[in-house]
Image (cartoon, rainbow, N blue to C red; front, top):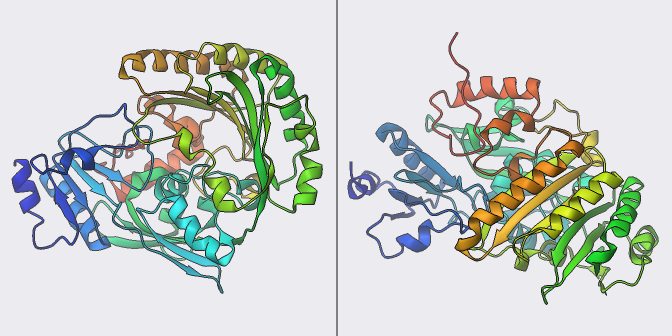
Length: 454
């Protein structure tokens, strides 16, 4: 069946837009956030309603086509698109409703965190999201989802009350603590393996102004600065989240910085962050009271759509002096000023107080996450970005826990998927996959293959 015939199968029973290779908008519609990924789907089904998702799932299953599911945001691994298959694109599904009295928000699967935050902050409320506002709520939540509020309120998936899921069989199910609880367990950390989530219902928290900002120092002070960061993180209250990073200034100079977010009063934040603000003579210190939406947008410009990305990540057991030495050395070798080496301290706190078996998310005992981001805007250095990221990540492995955050995994890391969950969780996820997607229709993700018979 050619692409035209494939689209014709859905005509008259599809409320959204059907885009194929012959359409003028095809090249724009197939383009995804990571410019390193270039694929040509047979059909892009831009869904306007859950019924459209059902129709697209049924078509792909019946015609034996590979399925890619595209939410609202990034997907660095490139799983949001495919060659010769059907892309189920949720970006038209943008509705967000807020019930401030019961502190519940409902959002469709194509919403980004920036769009969600704008609606919830009108009522002085928020749900824990990521650290970049252009990230989609769907992918982040399904993989667990940590960000600036997680140490106070848990992961995005910990604040999920229920979800609407379209399964591989084309059924529309509710997943919650009371309905299909096994599926509810699996979608909270297990990624997009079990269906297309078309609607999320989140618990909301009272979130007002934050005490937050960036402190920068010359790269020559990196070792002493990171030791201070380590000591501050070790004593951090739940209200404090931070990320330390090797990056380049707008002028291209190598620098080291910490972005800190204190969820509480400015007076208390000033006291807690005194060691950070009192260290040396910073090149920049813009810490102060800021609206939550502004904090969520702080990194948006550094992660524009279309740039080329290759990422590696691991949880760190601790930030020893030897670990700091290795990271300083590797950061100096970055092939592009856009590259980033970062240590996230956004987990621990409330994340660690959720029972290990309450959700599929693994590594709740982790404290730090290492990110090595090969980023650039020149296709000619794609190979250099990948080589450097792999080398820097490998050099840091003596300090890693062996676990990995599934949302940061790139497309060539299938051998690490079990490491994201641990043996017991992974076995449970495999059995769940066999129940809800035995033919592995939803395999363009950090894939959990169904259990083999016998």
